[in-house]
Amino acid sequence: MNTYYLYLYLLKYIKLKKRILVLLAMPVFCMSASAQNVQSTPLGSNSNAKFSIEVAKTSNNADFIVYSPGRPLRIDDFAAPGMANTIEQAITASGLAMSYKQYSENGQVVYNITVEPFFQKSKSWFLKSNIDAEVLSHEQKHFDLAAIKAHELADALRKTALTSENYKTLSKQVYTKYMHELDSEERAYDDETHHGNKKGKQNAWDKKVNDKLSAIGSYYNS
Image 1 (cartoon, rainbow, N blue to C red):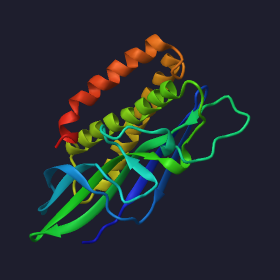
Image 2: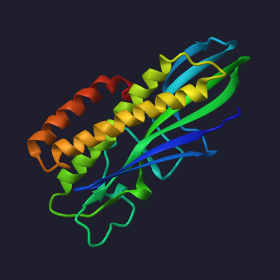
Image 3: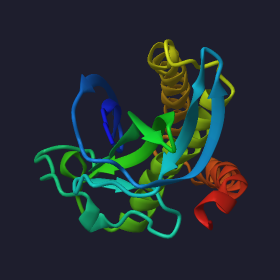
Image 4: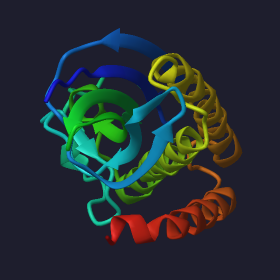
């Protein structure tokens, strides 16, 4: 099996009072991520090929926690040292990675795209205080939003007219569109909740996010 992975990272650094966005696009060779929920689509320009779109459940990258509703974030997941003399209590680095692989199966060429919602431990930090539970819950919702967007991105890719010639170009375009949407939603979440400090708004967002998670729950229970 020949495997080539191009990871496109959108790292969201979420601070208690301030938010910084960093967008990195970088090609790397890496090990395969385990994934399920495969849906295949015949390629229009190559009758001897098919396409599969997956959302990852695990990763071989020890620095990543791949999203799972049964595995919420813990304070000790935030492995980076906290910043001294700062009003911020936590920084979360999370986002989506998109990878490609190509292989032959029963004489047929298979093109695979995997979307991976991840939390990066080495770039996330947390300063303990008397409101740890509230801050951790707020940060968890950022990760939840990334997981929801991962499924929306995968669904959009399945509906895109991909071919063996255009799939990398078109998938990157779709990826970029959904990353912009995720960034806007993350910003709205922090702005409306004032980084978790407005309890009523936070409760409203908690319900909104939980309702969306319920819609994709069957995948995680499979």
